[in-house]
Image (cartoon, rainbow, N blue to C red):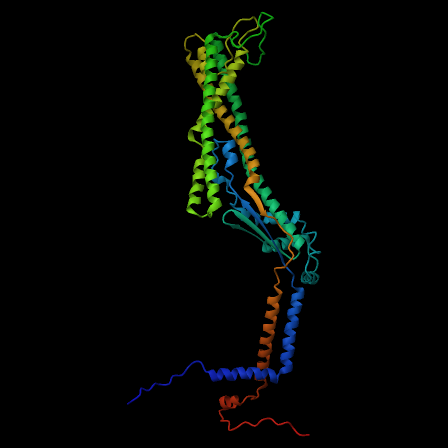
Amino acid sequence: MLRPTYAKTNSDFDLDSVKLLIGFVGRAVLRHLRLSIVVFVGTIALTVVALMFMPPLYRVQSRILTHTNYIIPALATPGRSVPWQAQSSTDGAVEIIKARDNLRGIIDEANLAATWKETRTPLGKISDRVRGEMTSEDQELALISLLDDRFSAVIEDEKVIVMTIEWHDPAVAVRILETAQKRFLENRKNRELSEINETVTILAHQVEESAPGLELAAERIRTVAQKSGMRVAPTEVAPPPIASSDRKPGPSAGRSPAEVAAQRDAEEALRDQRTAIADIERSYSERVRGAQEHLSKLRGTLGPNHPDVVNATRNVELQSKPPEELSSMKTEESRLATQLSRMQTVANQTVAGNGERVERPPVISRPVVSLSTDRAPNPELEQAMSDYERLDRTQVELYRRLEDAKMEVQTATAGFNYRYLVTQPPVFPHKTVKPKKPVIVLSGIFMACVQALVLAVIADILSGRIVEPWQVTRFVRIPVLGEIADQPRKS
């Protein structure tokens, strides 16, 4: 029976050659034992010296938890039109922390320039002596570059701001991180409040600019009323007493029944308007509070990325939006309150010096004027009153927006402490993170062994001698008949 034959193939891996090479390297160390020992010991010594001059680094970390505050703004100003997305606490946080101006401020407040020489590493002191004394500008640039390299900030889970510093002096590291944390919180607070304060300044300027136009409109009403034969008492004059010295003018003194009824209707309308606003705000607050409580319960049992938690968060944002009709109702409330206040002011100024009733000042709303006169319609007066009412409504709206902006300043100041919570303040470190001595020592031993082996082999190659039997067969191409062991020489 014929057996199949297989052709021999040349393998790329020659086990005998590998054994010969390993034996050659090992015997090369024995042939150059002094050289190998010197290289090994020298490498270990250099590793120890490097460890002595390598500056130790201490790591300090700080964590700030951010949270969007819904409760205070929703309860303080239910009709606020500021979107909740504007309260994002982590937008641009890393860029602000790592900004060059902020790094320069940290250096100044932490007084790093004054402690530069005292906290300098031995290697750094040697470098300073070689290069010479640094100028203040060069020192500042070096500190900024070093701080930018050793100081980092990241955002975790879109809610946690983590600041980390690695420095060669633990006390200075804690001081740097405390300064960076304080500057970040102050920068955030000043930035948010400055935007609102700038809005308050703009609205106050608009209110101030609207006053002359309103006065001109009132003056036009006075002029038209005087042309029509109406007697107008100036609003600046205090109400004089009535002819009878033992009586003081009551609420309806010198006023027609129509005027008294108009004021009563205005009071009832204002009361009803405020009741309706209170009902809407109460319902709105209950919805927001209920959504917040539901979200808090879900967060206590589920993770932040759970679908129920995500839906509950969206529901909180949806319920936190103020009702659309609330803004218009508050505007109407302001208009009614202003109208009623002017009615009450005019009620005390409708008696002339001779006890004769006169027309109220023209700085009033149009319905009161129409009720207080029996004259024929005057188109010019009607137009003047219409212009005045339009300007008056504009000013009332500006006043309302100004008061809302002032309230926003107070709510932003009060709510800031609830939006940022320092969960991990800087703590003095007791262990270094760099250099890692065990790793460096093991690496030094490994490199010492490798260098000793390599240099021993190189010494054999550079000698140009045949020191192994296999070199005769492979390089000289002469077969080896036998090997004679070295015998010690006799004296």
